[in-house]
Amino acid sequence: MQVSEFIRLSGCRVLTGDYEDRTIASGYTCDLLSHVMGKGQADMAWITVQAHMNVIAVAALLDFACVIIPEELPVDEAIVKKAAQEDIILLSSSMTAYELVTLLAANGVPTARKN
Image 1 (tube, one colour):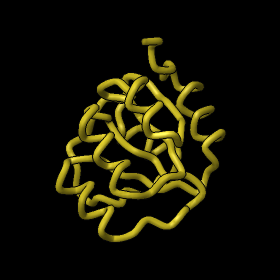
Image 2 (cartoon, helix red, strand yellow):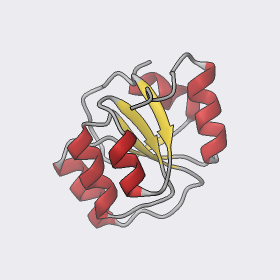
Image 3 (cartoon, one colour):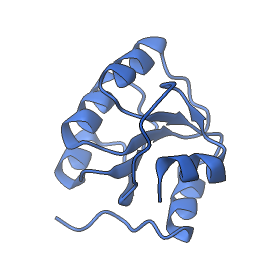
């Protein structure tokens, strides 16, 4: 699934403005950054309630397809700017993390492979 297709299906708002569309190869939800660093894989869609600079650093390091912040949680403008600088697609959704994961799975996006 392409990020653009996920945006269309979910109604997510793109926080980082223009972006180069990416393929979502897998999905993952977790808020413990060290755990995500150990399990994360390139082209993954990461759903997290964390909205700070370290999230962007992890997403850039592991080359994630996008980061999705659920429940319209606030995201500071400095975080959005850093995500744009790092070419991270940052999305905001009114849906819960559970609803977002369910949507990804229902549209054929597998969970991240076990490391």
